[in-house]
Length: 85
Image 1 (cartoon, rainbow, N blue to C red):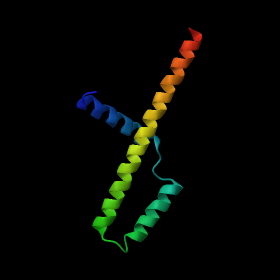
Image 2: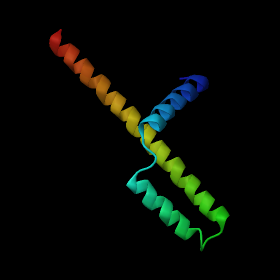
Image 3: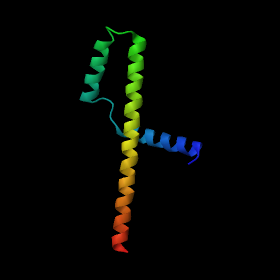
Image 4: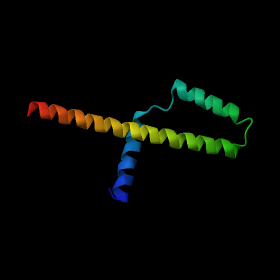
């Protein structure tokens, strides 16, 4: 896949995930509270780096999960079509 098409696909996946995943959950409120507590003891630049690393990791994991789910869905459809044919 060329670079432009890959960027478009990644953007599409990230947009779908952003629209589908709620941001205000009990889990996120707990994380936000902990980050606020940690920010009292560590330099803000270190906290920002940590937060960015966590965001990058979780975005990548969500994207991978979405793509794996799509692959599973396509395989299931192919199996159903093969049984019918």
